[in-house]
Length: 468
Image (tube, rainbow, N blue to C red; front, side, top):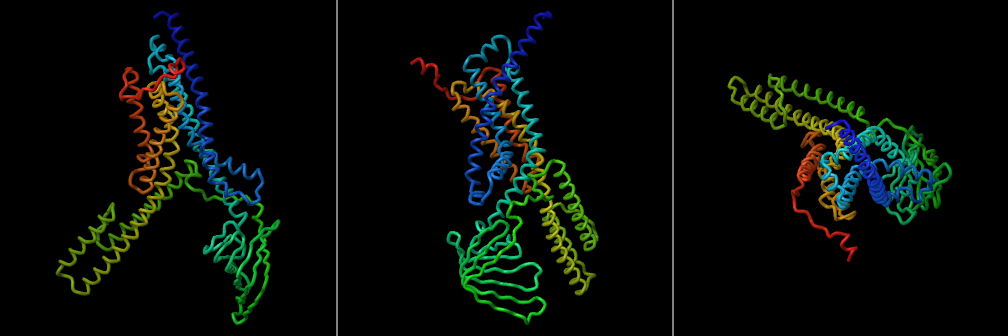
């Protein structure tokens, strides 16, 4: 191959790469907007009751919705990549562009190279988003959601459930009809000079600019001084109004160092895992010491069953020991029963610590496994688009939904199993990617050989319909 021919090949491949990336970007943007819109509307319908009727300004509502867009986008991007790949390769295959490229000596692997690079780029951006932007937005969304929830406590009151959000007071009601509460009982809390309890047949809870206004009807007030319990007072009233100062009424934006696993970056979760590793080490050391003090042997049982077996074996040995008198035998039995109780408690603690540690491990792996799926979905969507080239947008959407649903179900299943200590976190989070990789590799290899691995449904050609 001379230099001129080589330059022509390189120039052709560059043009082809730019063309395929350009053809992929527009369907990706369209798919991302469509999927995000559908998920956002679903979220809006479920969350609209959280801020309706609470007197929130438009800016606060928009901020709440914007913060919750983070997890929606993190879920939409991989599905958008799969749908875009199906649409792109379905379109160019239907227009016989794939056949033209192959006739020119360009292999299918060369054709999907630039879309794969696009998938890698999307995966890198999504990894950064999941590690730094998503946790912070989830954290801010939870704080704002809590503030909105406390802004109108009267909407949060349910019969038979204590309301503890009011400053200096706790309240419980027997029933509720609209805004009218019945069988109202109020109790003072905190350090006060007198303990106060109020009972009323009915009441309403309203809000002022900087306070709650609690209006009670037909009730009694009971007061008992804390310093002198002989000083007791009972007051009967027809109408009683209580003004409760509430600075949080104006949405006091709080900050907190307490974060859940989905509100943490990877370094934060690694530190959490290290703290649980230290706790696990302390419990195991304490357990080994208990075995050594009781049995004289510092054994290291891995499971509760192994530990109980060791204790039962020791009990059988002690009972067969003829050198022990009755008092010594009873003492040994008490020590073994005490060891059994400690074993049960320690293994319960070990299981709890391991479960908490796995929870952070699951979230760490998820931040990388979900973006990596973007690459796999390009590898999966390209051959699927070629096979279902005549189905158009409807077929692309259906196939992408089926495969993404399969992937998401496996991801949720792996997450649940890892959270319950049934499998390691890495296995639970990367198994769906492995399954998708096998399927994608299978379809790609057979597409390279121009032979369908499975019988595909033959969709009627839209051009024939148009001609008729």
